[in-house]
Image 1 (tube, helix red, strand yellow):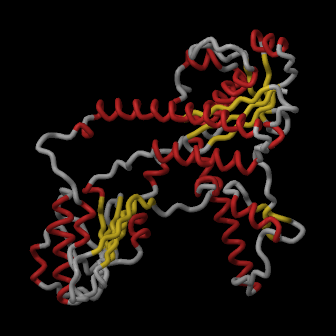
Image 2: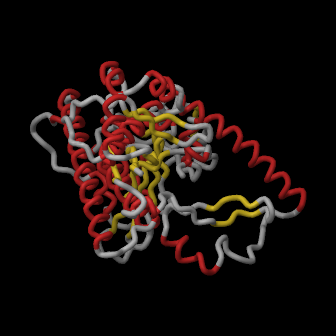
Image 3: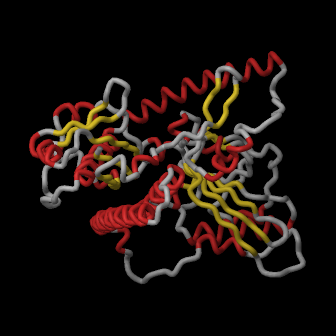
Length: 438
């Protein structure tokens, strides 16, 4: 589960990391300039197309289309693989299906992941090694000022703080000064992009900060931390409100648990056995979908490997057809009223709009309808065919159920399909559905 789903506090976004090695040398306090590789680039004489909003919009739309086509291709390959394994007499178990689904989601997320809209001027603080040795002060400040910041075209004058609590500084916008820095060497006056504060500075907000380890031994590292509001502003308003509720509940529970541990002297709990039994170890470690659940009898969490998808759903003896479909959530035009009117009933529209993330709900229902259509094994009428005759609503227990109307119900009756079972799932970017006509 993600931090958003858990309601965990989010202190920042680790947007970039880099390690670098320097040239060979004998000086420990004055390493080389390998950190320059963080900003290496090939400059162009002409303006870059990526700075054109229209160009970027076209490229994003085209890329999403490519990813959708890739998902469709992988779906067909997955079904062919299931069929081949059945013919070979093999069993398609839940662990295998789960692993393939997780892999599809991860690859799709990686393909669609966009760079954060960050610019050089958004970096408000730089936390560096600062060993206070003469050689390192000269070398490190020279690299960070005259090279790195000039290369990324940062404007001069903002603060530089030698602090360890970079995340806290980014969140609060308060840069603590170094109380011992009461006599900065005049040699550093030419570092126009850096400032060495001796007093605390209250800024109007810091969007991002850089932490650098200009390390000894000719090895260095750099990390860019972005303010968490960049994540929160990208969420659906209703989903963000749900996250805040989970976060408040989690905060109260954490405070209660910490208080009890301090009162009862149970801050450190010695574990005597793992969360799973010996014969379950391999299944738990190999199944990325395995989750621990709370056991009220023992008061501990333990693993009960649940089958995300029933392996029997893929056996030929218990089903007439199996349909699988997946789609990028961003590619489903839920904001188009014509699309909704052609493909969703009023009850479905009302349900999806009431959910924390309407785009995810619409996408899950959409791929569910496609999966149901494929499981019936009827001839396709093309990509523009309406799907309103296939209705997916939740039953009393909260599970999705399929109701067929009109022509879809007629086709199902002709094939002797009394009902269709369906399983819906979605990640942050991809919706997936499995349907079984039985």
